[in-house]
Length: 270
Image (spheres, rainbow, N blue to C red):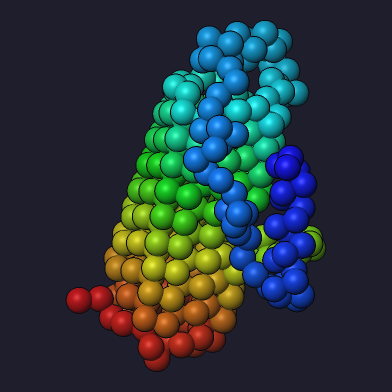
């Protein structure tokens, strides 16, 4: 079965489970993550490097790697800026320090990929699978992200101005949104980010910069916001059940905290 067909079938199944489309994307269901399609590579690092270097410098339509199987490769430090990596398989691939600015990573697979200190500024990550990916110190400023980053490490990542909000216009595959369940976002810069309807259940947000964030209808149940900067952050209908809140002084600078859901069930920091 081709990936495109499998993707479509999973999408239909999601809608059958919940015809309103109000479900989080789950493209892992029924996928063999240990099969060759998800673990093997059809190119070497040298071949990928040669393809990237063959693109004229400054060409906005960079290298085309759509659907390529590049899992488990060492692609650290390479420049994919503006490249087309739609549907590419990059599971457990080493992309440390790689440049992926403005790259199309829509529906790509980066499960347990290492993107430490990588640059993904203004990249497109729609429906991207990034479970347990490592993005410590990565630059995702201005990126559009409806990826599944469950269990991912984003300690010190830069997400200022990023848009992780739900795509309310296109719900044929369920509610596509940023999913950061149990993700490590300690010390991350999320200033001015759009986190509306984002799933941040049990996320670690200690000392994160959430200034002027849109948290409208986001799920922060069980999240730890100890020492987070929430000045100007909008908590309208944000679910705060069992969340650990920052100090009263910090909360005084937030917006619409009184309109948050389950505020009475939130916890003060120890």
